[in-house]
Length: 442
Image 1 (cartoon, rainbow, N blue to C red):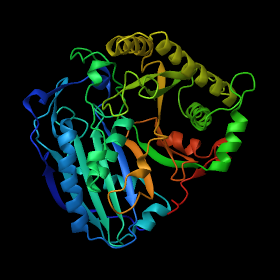
Image 2 (cartoon, rainbow, N blue to C red):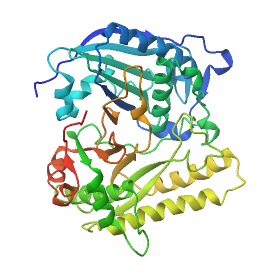
Image 3 (cartoon, rainbow, N blue to C red):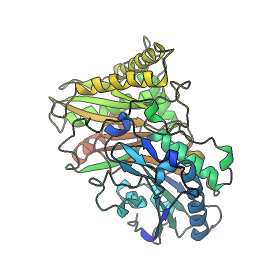
């Protein structure tokens, strides 16, 4: 593939179409929001248009509908101020760009994640790693290909948005662009009514080696038929007769992570898999689907010490046990208020994390975006042909799982240190079930 070159056409500040009322001008962040690293939650949406719609028309529709959407999602037009967001209508950044030399089909034939970072608007920030407290909450880049295709790169500060939040925002924005905004329930910004409010003096340990290691992101696709084979292999008749797609893929990836790390790094480290779990569907009586924020429970769900070998069936059993343990904690609090439940879960999370350190533990994070309706994001020119998710700037040892367009397969976007990736992508057991970066079917 010829190297894609993206050229910026224009940059604009998009403000809400209506002024935010004074009583909504300050939004408290929760303790969970506060402890997250200074990164953006990112979504890439790719479209191939059946009929050529001019970039000017598309851009105008996107910006007008974004302005209207920001009236509902008003904190996204604000700025972080310590442990709060000033909902001051300062605005979101919108970048128009175009690609002349490379049709979108070339990009989708074998997506290069280093190249498609150009489809994000991060170049408008001088130093992303040091500007966390002054970042705009929302950045958007619409890139137009000469063939008529289009990519939308969306960055929302992780301080206010988990994967479910960015999905809610995209769904609302797309509905607004189609003229159906009134049919979508408004978002709720009340995550700090669940988890305790952020304390500015509380900080988790920081990995001193972060951002100093060369890392690489690659895509591994588990097709529907291979997933069925994997689910059969991962089954444990005594405990988990029918593991889910995500459980099976997670267990296999975990085994491959450990094998790759053991061949390249200090094997005395305890390796831990941290897996955030969306709490909204688990406690629907307390947490509405449209709640925006980091409404997750995050804990180490798997761990191995030294040169211990991972068995997929055992990993699936342990994953299921952690899921059931969380269910017990939630069920035991049937009469709890939202804040009581949030405080209990926050204390449980923080006590778990307090037992780990970067000196003795090697963390891996895996986030599942499966079942989020991102492929329904039609702005008026059809649904996306491909959706990808990540965080930006990229972090080491982070994996995103997302549904394939058919809803049956799973795509894993894996970021590892370069030396570990060389070993990981050659793992024979992984390659028995996953294809390495196949063409996106459009």
